[in-house]
Structures are given as C-alpha cells and as structure tokens.
Image (cartoon, rainbow, N blue to C red; front, side, top):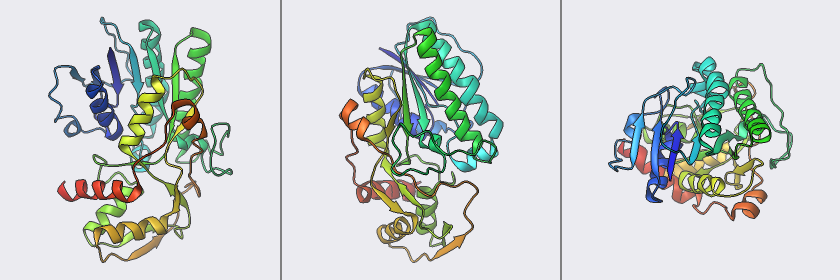
Length: 307
C-alpha cells in the first residue's frame, strides 16, 4: 500500500513515517520545511520512502495509486503559528482542500490530524468529542484553532457530499524525541531550561493543567484510527492530568537540575485545563496510552541532552 504523509519531516510526521515503513507501506513524505526539519528523516534509508519538498497549499498530483493520506502539515506550536499566522490558516484551509481533493481522485482513505485546540479554553473537563469548544476566533491563537476547526468541517463535507473515506484525530499534547528545542511548548521549554540550569519559566500561577502523551503511543493511535471504520472525531491523548507546577518539578527532579521557577503573565486565551476523554478511542480503536510519563520524559531528556 502507498501512503502520503504531509508534514512528514515534522515531529509527529517523521515518527509516523517510521512506523508506516516498519508496517511495510510505501511512504511518500511531503513537507515544505516551514517548521519541519530534514534531519528528522535523514536516518531513513528505505527504498520504500520518498521525500518531496512541496507546499500542500498548492495542488500536487500522483499517477500511482495512493491508498492512505495522512494530513499532518501545519505549524503546531504557539511560537510557530503566531509567527506564521497566514500560512497556518492557508494550510488548514487550502492544504486540507488539496489533500481531500487528492484523496477523492485516488479513492484513498484520508486522515486529518486535528487538535485538542479545537476545544479552545474548555469549559468542560475532561473534553469529550461531543463538546463543541470555547474558542476566541479573533484572538491570536484563533489562527490555529479555527484553521483546524475549518479543516474538520471541510473533511466532513467531503465525506458527506463526495463520499470520501475520512477520519479525524483530535491530538492532545504529545512529546518525545525530535521536538524542536525552541518551539515554545512546555515540554521542550522546561527540559532545555533545566538542562542549562536556567530559570524555568511558568506562565500564570502554574495551576493550569495539561496531559502528556508519548509520541509512540500517539502514532499508534493514528495508525489504528486510519485502519478503523470510524468517521467521527476521536481524541488521541493521555488522560492523566497534572498542573504545570507539578510537571516543572518532575522535570527538575529527573534532570537533577538546580533551576528555580519564575513566573510570567499567562498568554492570551491560554487554556486553563487540557485533558482528553478517551472513552471513544478505547471503545472504537482498543487504544490507550502505554508509556508512563516518567519513562517518556527520561527518553525525551536523553534526546535533548544529545542534541
């Protein structure tokens, strides 16, 4: 089977390419490297792997039969989508449109990598797929939130009106090797500051909660989802919740750092809680995360120590 992975040189995309190759797929990785990194796929030597540098907001055509399209292309960290707001909106709209068109032409199964940010700053915790969200469409984070919400809408429209075989994964906080050191998310921020002995920057009072899913678990969930028969959105993430202060203290303990905590103002529209209800993933996919946070953090810290 031949598979396309857009955003395949990114953090999640490169791990997905790795898994698909181990499963015997022919993998076509598409990435314009706006936020991806060619180093994430340099280790892949397989003849079944092809990299194409391309911006998916522009159409692309394939003569060979494509079976699956995984659409992961998008800036995904606050630093990236705040620096690239127009590009973020375009890849959510035009990029998704183009990849759905390709899936329609090829009669391929399409998976959209959506996000927990579709729920915005939620008023419900944990967040089930039935929750419609609390999103500020004109706030600075709206460029990402609404790009993904639009992507979900057009994906369902193509499913209903063109009979495209679609899947939607709402991805919650994921961490692991190949995260960018400076991407602005809490895991690389805290790890890098701790390894350097710098002050660890906590936004707000640190009482806001997060949950963290190790990358191998997340990628397994995506693979299970595209092979399932389920069309509605599915949360993929770890339901174990902790506040940011607890997480900072865990990073300090594992790294053995002498870093102190310093506090800064909470960014605009930063969610106060973030925790997936994974009842649907358990029931439909037989999936739940297996890697404990302490083990995953050790592996992630080792990666950042070596790079």
